[in-house]
Length: 210
Ligand SMILES: N[C@@H](CCC(=O)N[C@@H](CS)C(=O)NCC(=O)O)C(=O)O
View 1 (cartoon, rainbow, N blue to C red):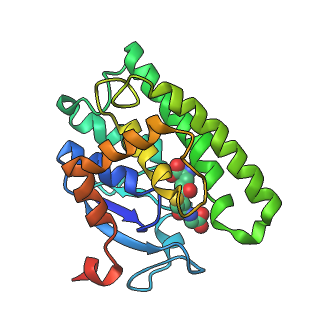
View 2: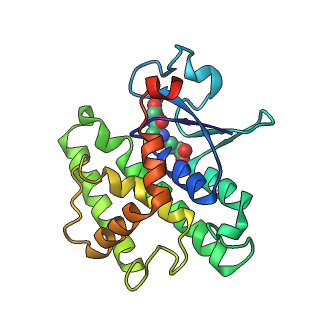
View 3: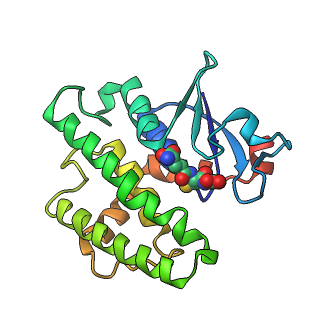
């Protein structure tokens, strides 16, 4: 399986999920900062993925899986024994689905693109930061007395949240008011598979090609 990625991108979430599920991925670097977006060999990314954003998961049968929340569930369901996603049809699965949609629509898409494009202006960025803080307040409560977002069981929702919390310093969205999130972030960084995924996902195009 191939994961189209960028080191600063939300593709880190599937990289973490795959590492936790014991699934090997071939990483394909996409320059999502340059226009038009290209692979390291110069191929136009839009020719591979009409959405023109990462992540994209290329399967061995030639089909593709897109959208972070869907890719995460796909990877988790490949190896259900890991517990990265509760079984379909259970209340726990419903909580995961709710959490993934919340993270995608309320948190991820408030950071990206708004907080990474200063050209949108201070007003828009200040507004986005206020919304991020309001959404973190919800996550803060959810993490109260819990090790992970769903409770005692680590899940792919934690992999997704990690992306945004990892962006917090660069995007200037303070975590000072959110001790549960800060403690959770430290727990995440201590997980060997999270560390391995971060290392793999931060590779430059040259390192990937080597
Ligand atoms: N809805 C998409 C959003 C993905 C997304 O926002 N990707 C960003 C990186 S975090 C990207 O590739 N941006 C480049 C662009 O939009 O041109 C998903 O869930 O996968």
